[in-house]
Picture (cartoon, protein in one colour):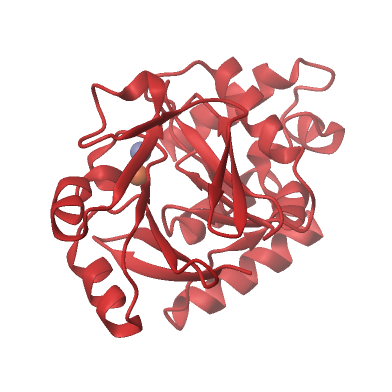
Length: 254
Ligand code: ZN
Ligand code: FE
């Protein structure tokens, strides 16, 4: 089994360190900055062997070159973003499976936030690293993709097993919860989760990772095809992508 460390960085980013004990391989997912990564590696006595980038934004690739220079690690990212990901060594794309020590990671293309966004799914370890595509109770802004692309990407992630831990790249959950309540203020599972998120953030606790089954149940961006939510929005029987686009637009203005 892999060991996963969550490192807070910048104002609301999370960098993850993934350690596979049999091989000793260690990966950093979306290292925005080098210092917390190097400190965690020193504290654990781990050697960084890989960087997994989900997309090219600076708060996800900012430390690629510094970490590569300090450790000689290999940088992995989407084939189509070779010109936008600093230090990219290994280009990957949809459906590709990579060995990571004794475990395997599968690459999923999830365009929408950017056109070259990918996610890393550790099937046996029940862990998904999805960058800025799916957030706890939210989803990424559409900087490059269309609502259709993002909805399809979210559906792809929604199809993964219920017991998948969602490791997203930002602590946006409180704001997402408050927004979600504007859509479904009386939906009991959401109300309960929002209260829990309020409590956790009041004590400065991380709300990430979350379980995918909980996202399926309460994340409004995964519920654009829910008859109950559609009715709340006055959009009954409309196409899910239109409902998704409406929710995303409301969030942009929230
Ligand atoms: Zn981003
Ligand atoms: Fe980001």
